[in-house]
Amino acid sequence: MPLRSIAIYPRLPGDAAIEALRWKYDHLADKVAYHVTLVFPFASDLGVGELGAHVRQACAGVAPFALSLGPAIVQDDGVVMLPVDEGATQIAALHQRLYSGPLAAFLDLRFSYRPHVTIGRCADAAAVAACLHDATQLPPLAGNVAGIGIEVIAADASSQLELIVPFSSVPAPLGAYA
Image (cartoon, rainbow, N blue to C red):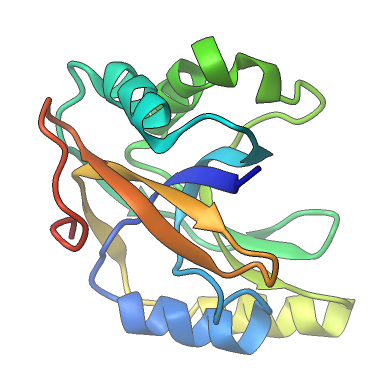
């Protein structure tokens, strides 16, 4: 049964700076590009066709939109993230739409959803402080979002895009999303 997730993979000015921070503070940096998760990892026998149809339906009527990331914040578990500022309402709506139909059973109501990009997973207070300090050097991070990616997650936590659904009725071929 494949393990998948659904996310937005924005491309913003400052990509290199985001990835440099992630390589320093996030052990998953070599496994997956920076992203905003819409549907957290789930194991299901859903085929990519059925899953893609559900994602296209959830995206119906959604136009590309602006996205900006705010200053870094930290969660209690040592995760350092850049919260989505502009675009957060649209992303939260997509999150809700996606957790319907065939994905409804995977919604975990124990957690509240906050759109963000993770830049660090820190084991101690010193690493959190260093990551937060380094994040103050990031350039302004704003751009546009044009679609959603469905990824397959391997046993080593690496991921590979399986399907890209642009905010239109026609899916783009892999590699066309930017």
